[in-house]
Image (tube, rainbow, N blue to C red; front, side):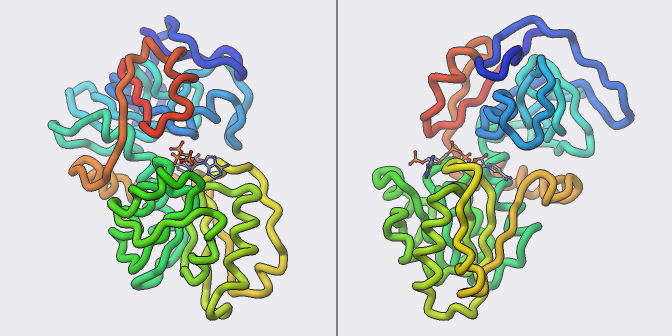
Length: 310
Ligand SMILES: NC(=O)c1ccc[n+]([C@@H]2O[C@H](COP(=O)([O-])OP(=O)(O)OC[C@H]3O[C@@H](n4cnc5c(N)ncnc54)[C@H](OP(=O)(O)O)[C@@H]3O)[C@@H](O)[C@H]2O)c1
């Protein structure tokens, strides 16, 4: 079969011949890949920078996909960290980390949407108790995951969602997705009185946002839960210690590890149902897997999620 193969961490994957996969453990299935998306997490897997990277090469990247099983049924599958991911004609999945999909689903939209939707869905369902009628700020709201977080927070009953981002022309359209207000990082004190922050940015931008928001809170004894989900602005953040003393601020992370695999699996059917039904506004572009090497770099700043189709 053919696959996108990473042979060095500092170059994009190449489209190469690769040995056919075999199922070796109970519960594993060999499946045909129908659509596999290029999420930021896949880029960090392929360049060796993700915190789960073992440094082993060669590897076929891809952490999830819409696949077709031997009975012809479409499934959405999540993969563990493995050297055979989903950017291949065929791969191996664990049946209990997959969910059947309706036959007439758009596989490209589902492949594009599941990971970004899951990021906030799982955070709000499995990492925190979302207060009733919560006010939620999304930092990094213009990205794929941030745009979904606005919609997910509203779906889960948030009374107000404030979208925070760095690019005004990308922020403005977010009101159509359900954001009640949008603001730049410079104006983030306007989001001071939220109950929950969903943070996709981290780095200095997060430290600065805390410094701006904490003193501006009307009631600093009201709980503020800051959920660390992504790090597009930096892997490390110089957090102000005073912020944790001056307000009832607690910091939690949400991702693989802090959310056990079985908790992700429990949420999968509901997420897949909502995404398959078209409940979320998903921007996706299908690209033949054979074009992986060119598309890898040329799509880096695209606001559409690239989905490879073998
Ligand atoms: N923990 C989880 O379960 C989980 C799941 C999915 C994703 N994530 C993480 O969440 C993050 C976002 O993912 P995504 O799918 O939304 O990525 P994406 O679609 O590529 O969007 C990235 C966004 O980040 C913004 N951005 C980039 N650099 C920035 C900076 N220095 N300061 C402020 N904003 C910046 C960009 O803003 P502009 O619009 O201004 O260019 C863009 O909108 C990634 O780190 C990803 O790994 C985590």
